[in-house]
Length: 296
Ligand code: SAM
Image (cartoon, rainbow, N blue to C red; front, side, top):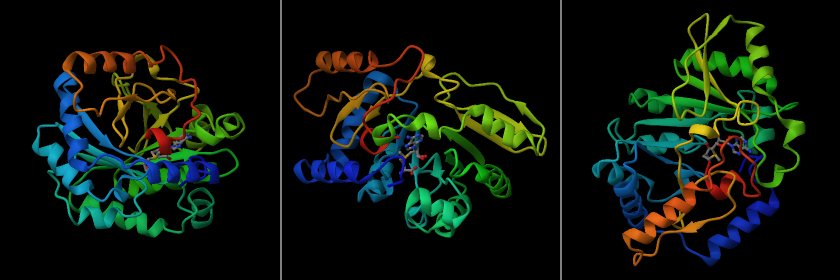
């Protein structure tokens, strides 16, 4: 429930939806993903949220997807319950883990995440690395809040030998109209890093969300610059929520329901096309939904 994603209103709305409608059971969700896979030949299924480690049946869902030939199953997590999750998984189960860590300083971390748990998150990262599961760090940088954490986070990533990505704030959910004031841009992030390190840019892979650089000391870092360097043009992602709705774009407020088991191949294909038509040609427009609702 980080502050840029959840305020009281979003939290209450989410709770009301949960009380009214139960999400899909893990096997229903797994089967729906395999149904989509028949059309899409998925490369990766990323389980995110909200917070995926709060989903009771995450372990069977991960194992089911892996057993049914999804090439890479990955998760994005706040890391709070990661150590416990890792104890139930093997290297073969998870291709990689993105851990969100916006600050190393406990007070700044608390200001953003409303929790005091940096050391607990680091224990989760260590547990994954001990099992040889690759980890990447994500840090959203907010002007006036955590830009002084860029170098400590970069250097922390270097000590753990993991890549790190810094994210520009996206205009979603309750910060929809206020993000411009808080955005710390790609150039500003680069300036902070260049003040201490020489850097060289690395080639961008098609469909990638981040631009990557390497410091003179060999540390790789990326920037997801949704505002200043948008990457919509070759976006190849499709989102599925836990109620069985798909979205072709993070900036779409329009869920497309596909969970109905009576849905034939032709109708499913049409719905997929409608979802893909939601994609933006150039730039993310922003969304009234927060990442908690649509899945980040
Ligand atoms: N709860 C998990 C986590 O903390 O990683 C998974 C979901 S979270 C929505 C995924 C990522 O989206 C996190 O790295 C989070 O910081 C980022 N995020 C959420 N809202 C954002 C926003 N408005 N702008 C940029 N990044 C955002």
